[in-house]
Image (cartoon, rainbow, N blue to C red):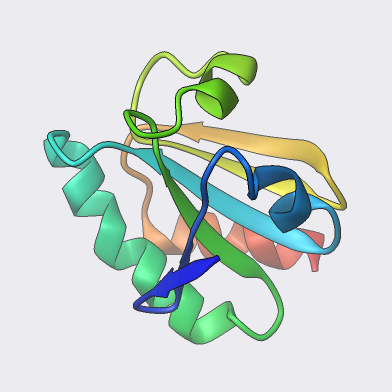
Length: 108
């Protein structure tokens, strides 16, 4: 798993092991998506603040079509919060740092 500014770069083949245990927030995004570019620095801030307690990751939906399709992601950015491999919360559109941090804290 590559790491970019504290955010784990997730691919279809590393997805399952990434979410298997603990709390993981994954941002599904694409390079051409302007709202996704707005979400990226927020994810980096969360990774910097909560990286010890939770995994913060991102998945490029264009390069990794299997996982977004499996989860029915049709709009991006979509962020999904997982705990021990199970989806516990989903956010569609750009979310504030406070909203995501609160959701993460509730699962820790």
